[in-house]
Image (tube, rainbow, N blue to C red; front, side, top):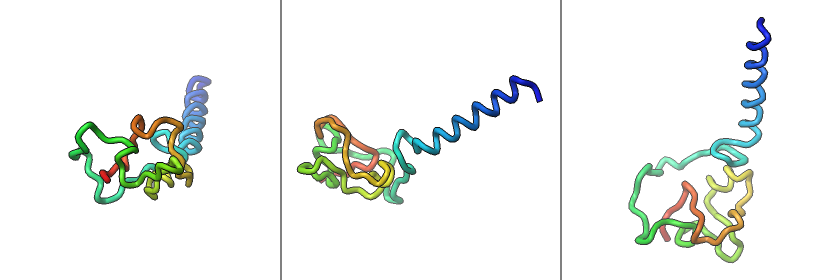
Length: 94
């Protein structure tokens, strides 16, 4: 086996290991959507954000959606940003 091929194989293995550790789509766990998920939908006038999502716990700065929690490594915490500046794929209107 050529050296360059060995390096490519090693690089691919490391990339796969990193992807498994990090999770899909930047999370710490699997990226799963509910069967009811729509790729395009009408959102609240002014846009979608955690602030106007039915899953947000504003007092705790957390998301109650089980898919978000699993994707975030079993952690409901939202990014340390204002709720009207973040949104996830699991947004649903209040």
